[in-house]
Length: 255
Image (cartoon, rainbow, N blue to C red; front, side, top):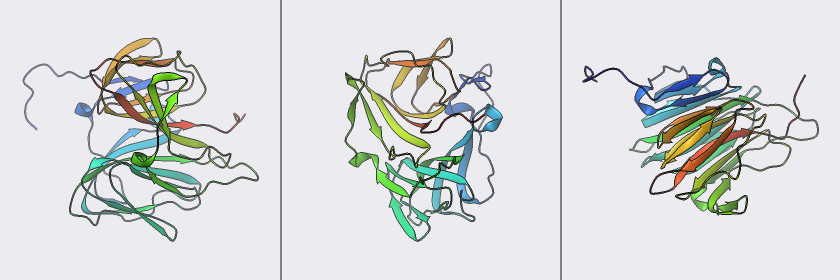
């Protein structure tokens, strides 16, 4: 870090409860108890107007959680963005070794423990949210790798693709998706809905409609979408625009 060479500037946009764009240049490392050896940034939280918390973290060799992440009514999810390292995620009696593209969902009665016993760093995307139980249904531990999931055409558009990472049955009140737009790809319409999203862009660039604002976004930007925020994107780069995003679903609105 050094003195700036010009005026202090930022692409960050924060509209509490409506939307946020958080580029990597302005992010700081947060000390989060229970995460030893993690260089972690809290991205979305109730302080932003979100009902969930999302983080991005670099996990160094030897890093480990010193207390279980989640459980006691909190569901959790981890996804390996990139890096040559391998993280081991333990949920109850099960352990999963994750490399790039690997992920684990832990139900709210379990939580997860994470450690990096490899010799290389990796970056992860973390999520936690209070689970909304539904009588007669329950969530379960899920693990996979996005590189093993066949993408499908999104909304009958030949240049937009989606991957679903979690099951869609009523035991789950959240899903994680990866959405990819080829150059000139876009949403089929401007979405306006009750669901919130948290999205991490890891490929390409685009022009995103967020509320009433068109905003340029690109690789490594984090986006938060509040309920009923108008949203839609055009891919504007020479390659794909791709991001992983969370979506709450399968539940009615509580009064």
